[in-house]
Image (cartoon, rainbow over all chains, first blue to last red; front, side, top):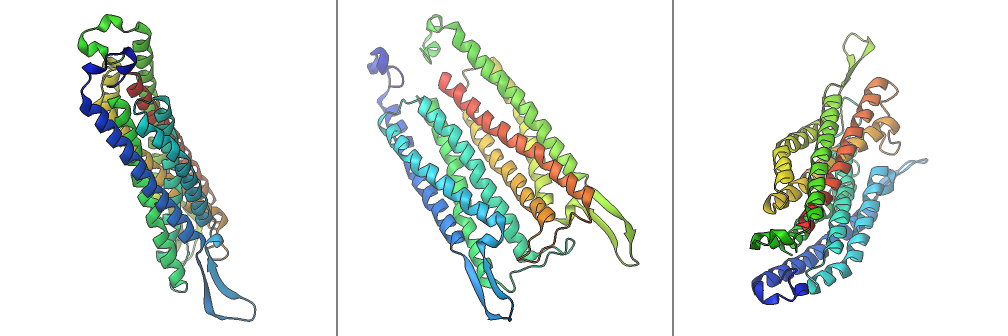
Length: 185
Length: 185
């Protein structure tokens, strides 16, 4: 069925191949949904994080929120951008289920998926580096752990990373799926 | 017309397409070399970083090296792994110049390239988060900048990131090139 239909030699190609291509495209759509949920959950979980300690002095109120650390703000922004891109890519993914021979649109998706993979990985691992520091601190640089005071804050920012790393794995699989679809045309 | 040579109709295929595929494969090889140089330079520049301050007390000698910060160690490891992978992928890339119709080996390369893209991005952005902290510090978390004391250390670790981010861009382009080669088969 691949490529031959435009030359009017449909009978030559085995039927099974079109079915597999359709299966790959449907799987592509499902993985995109999972990645959307992952990035959205990460962005929301991190974006709504704040903790106010029950004690305060006359001058300072002890409060921690994600925007205190620029890296965590980048994490929220990166996840939001990737989530928006994935939502925008859904129509194209649906088109691929119907037209499984599409070529240039798949190339475009592979390129953008790779760029978004880099973005979501950058956000997740930069945030992970800061979360690690918040938990462990660093003796040599004299950076103390802040997790003893801000316990629930730390738990929340650690948990937020999961969705992002999940989306990372999904995007690697999405790139592979698009490549398989291209190879099977 | 693509894919027709396996049915013994080679004469049908235009010569230009083979030439373009060959060009894509050669470009693939060149980009791999650039990425190897980038990751190698990053790993070496970061791995050889240390600075001993000219003053010391009776008990403490002020010395900074990359292994003081676990994230920077991860950066060196990630870059070394990606560099080793890229060197190992060279023979396959050369095979692709000769056999431009290869399919499964290209799929394998796309998958591994995507995984390595994630790894090098993780290393680079985690290190960037720490380098940013070393430069600016963070008032809310009470983490002070260490770059005033360890000036040349900071310059060195900042510079090390460049090669890694360059390799990141190269890997995105490599994924796109492999996809183009698959689509053009």
